[in-house]
Length: 75
Image 1: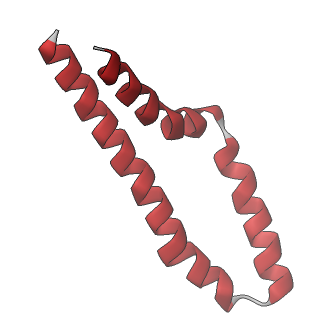
Image 2: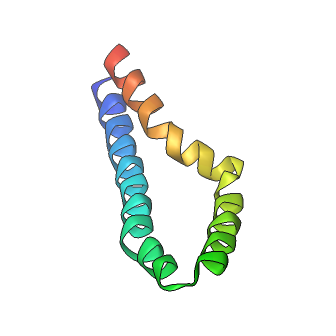
């Protein structure tokens, strides 16, 4: 059982690192690039960016690390 909790904790760690990387990229690169565009174009680009990540796969990727860690606490 101890090995299972270690595997789950590592998976949660990797998932959390992936989510942190996505947020870092958004704040570092994407927002600075959008700031260079004129306001109407930047607004349209941001609205199209917001549509894409609302897929189920990304939603699961964002929520799974927390779920994995709560299952580790129960073990």
